[in-house]
Image (cartoon, rainbow, N blue to C red; front, side, top):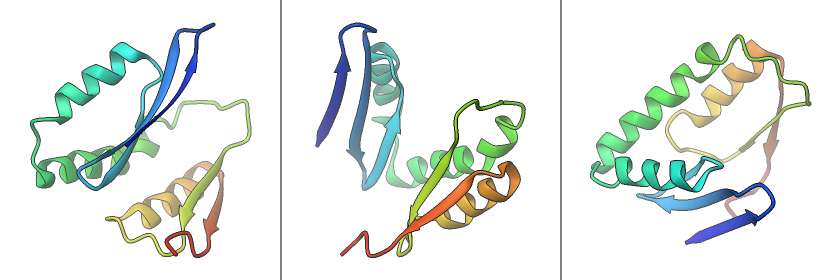
Length: 108
């Protein structure tokens, strides 16, 4: 399933794609998007899970010196059971001061 929002003025693309049971929302540039896909395609499900774990675990630390000028809202489904998504979002909210909102009954 592909869902793209194209902006011809900027030449940027946002892609959302189902990949091995995970939602991958990444990249704003077509070339970067296709490079990401080519890097993920040969991975097994276990390898993909490991890569996502590493990314989630290190996100807050790697972005600790980033100053966001707009409000940030973290969203997570209250029934989400994908890995440690809920615990990582909770940790990010605590470390960054971002608002964390749980969406009820999202999977129903």
